[in-house]
Structures are given as structure tokens and as C-alpha cells.
Length: 130
Image (cartoon, rainbow, N blue to C red; front, side, top):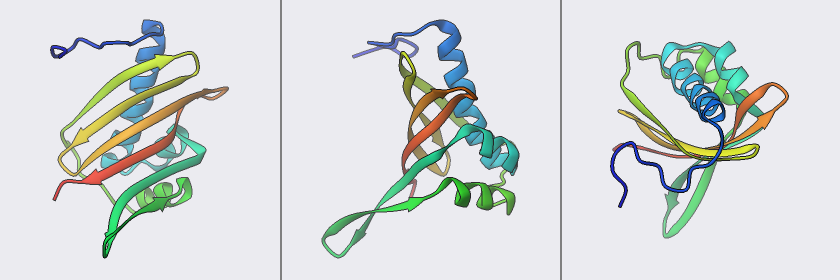
């Protein structure tokens, strides 16, 4: 296994890793700070954010769009000033990256893409902590 702080298989420049981490931080910090402008900037227009749910014996994925995330953020949906969270960048390769956010409320696996506007989150698969 890897020790804390050791990332196996990570590629990409330190600048890219820092930019990816900043984009992920924009996502979680804008949620907890109620900042829709910052949320809008960090999410790709074609964002797919999903949470697995159970309906009887079938596993389903319920989706949230970028527009809905910005709307929820505007309405202070997650506003929790000073909330604790951890951001990890797992892998950067060319113009794509993966990472995660662990907070008191959620575990988010994120995939990012580098755009002309900088790094943006394209996909999120998340669960709540019950």
C-alpha cells in the first residue's frame, strides 16, 4: 500500500496538480460558502453528477446538473462556514485528472478536464455519509 502523501501512478507537472487541486477546492468551498459564481466556474457545462440510490432491488443513479448545482449553491443549499474537508488529487495525465473530496457530509469522486477556461469538473460520483 501507499503511505499518506505518496501517490502511485501520478503523472503531470506540479503546476497541473496544483491547478486540479484548486478546481476541486473551488467546488467544495463554493458549496460550503454558498458562492454560486465560483461553483459555476469550476463545473464543466456538461457536468454529470450522480448518486447511487436503491429502488427495491435495483441500483439506480440519480443525477444533478450543473444548473441545479449552481441553483442549490445560490440558495445556500450546503452553506456551512468553516466545514472540514480533505481534497486529494489522484492522477493527472495530459488534459484529464481524477481526485476526491471527503467532507463531513459527502464522499465525492471527481473527474476533471482541462479547458480553455482552466480545469473543470466533468463528472462526480458521490454518496452521503449516513
